[in-house]
Length: 619
View 1 (cartoon, one colour):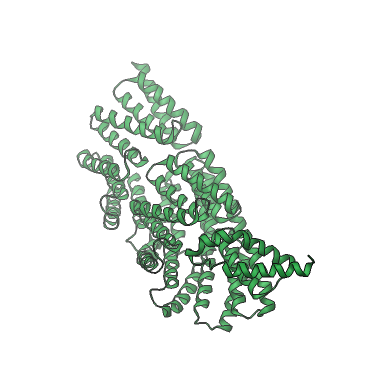
View 2 (view 1 turned 45 degrees about the horizontal axis):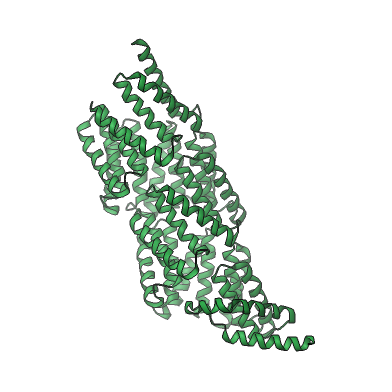
């Protein structure tokens, strides 16, 4: 068979497969697409070998590329779209809507791979063509506006993203409020508000997006899973972990049915579930899901993309939460390197990792390193987002916390106050972030023994948390704990005790007894019982806190060492020096190994140990 005859047979095969290969944008066609994929890929080879440039070959390659893109096989999809571009440029020219549609598909594939510059130029070219050929009020023009907005959003250009989203929404409104494109647009705007911490504006948009998507596309559609995932992330942000967990599980189930267990979207749901389980203190579940998620992303997308960086970041955070600082640090540094490579140093996400690493150095007592990174984080945030942005307020708050940890209250106070001012102007007072900042400033006044000011701030933070989150939320319980500690500092034990008890009850109900926050509550109430001379109760709660921390973190964690030191103090109070001294020694060794000999916590235990040793020798 000569080459010309082979080409004719190849054209017949392409025509046959093109006729049978359905539109992959309809999920009902995915099974048929999967069954025909090998045939389609063989036809792709025929197109390349025999240089078959026809409408039929372009449609087949385009549909095949779209299906591969949906299945996250971006590296295979990209050359198909590039071939389609070449064919369509010759058949219909570079000013045709079909050529622009292919540019958009190719841009989406590049965007998913983190190749933003390539995607940007393609989106802009597609937008220009559609504007010229179909007009700037056409739904296709809105679609590309929306996609370009997503690109700007990923790169931290929030003002440009919001402008494009709203321009797209104006066009999509002509399609009606019950259209999938309108719903998707709402979801994107909501995501931007969530990134800015404007949760009250984000919530109704996410809810409307979910409702429309369910009505139009059904509850087994990938877009519905995206809507569930986004709303779950918002609930996570506002501290409603129960709703977040339920929605993430629903999204995971849908994605497993649609894509299987080796797809990046399935991995994203695993990763989000891991973050919620971490908040619940279920570290084994969180670690397991996080590692599986990371493996899927690495296998499907590789290691040089933002999705991999995010999975790695969450795993690093898990290690940090459990006190495995030496394992967390290289992962944070790897994320920093990836984000620098992909996004550059002038990006909010790069600055966010600097902040994480700074926090880790602060825990390790390496305050100079932490200070330098906090300063760099602030500088980038100021340059990219400005001094009135919520991220800048967070950076100020963290730097203030570092100063406070070092006892430099005069430096910490104006930073806390400036952070609060920015939060009020950017997102108002009715939000968890403002309450958290009030709480931090209150703690500063508490340490300075300015109890009236501390009480006022603690109380305001508690009222905000009760109003927004309810009186059964862990953050509300934390406010109770802070007030109790304030009363305890003033010797008002009768006022402190019921607050500690309520805190303990709420924390147990909300998070369970195996959560770090419950261990904190148990440790604190034990200290009060010790002050009240109720040594049996103090001993019970110290031991409970110690056991929880041993199970959660292991016996080499600073929090475990801190409770050991508290228990040693109790034995010292009881005159049981033989039991106290070895606990002090264990506590000191752990703290020195993990935090270093110059850390303030080490100095406190050393002083207590020395006092105990002196008393034991005197007796």
